[in-house]
Image (tube, rainbow, N blue to C red; front, side):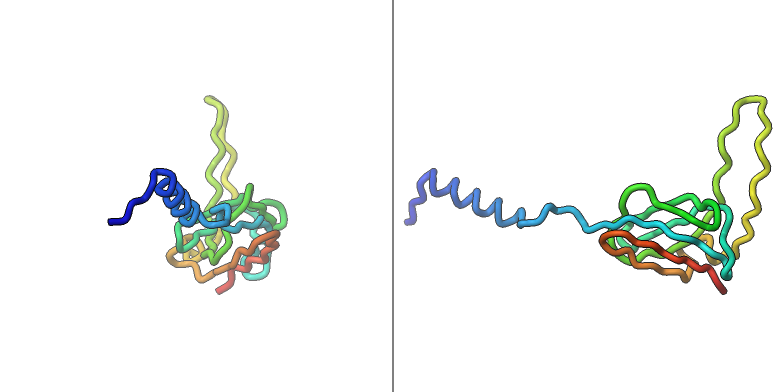
Length: 135
């Protein structure tokens, strides 16, 4: 019969715990994401650009002047399907008339992650993406 002292058992447990933790921080690599969105070569002037990863990761950014966008925070590295959606209307104070929504004339296939053919890869560090939605 093998006898293991309490100190030896604790040492083995500590070694096993350290071995399962690994040496890394456990965080996935990530990058910052910005760029422009165009529709058939022309800047998209309104809407939100959405990034949907196969692993469930996602990001969204508002499209601004000249089709420019910037995701707040960082995005996990990997491949994403890109799609665009109309910008939701801003909440209004009671009694105040809402502004007319901007025209969002984007083909239906670019409006959903399940139908968009547009893919991008996010890498560690800074990513300046040129996203062109074209038929």
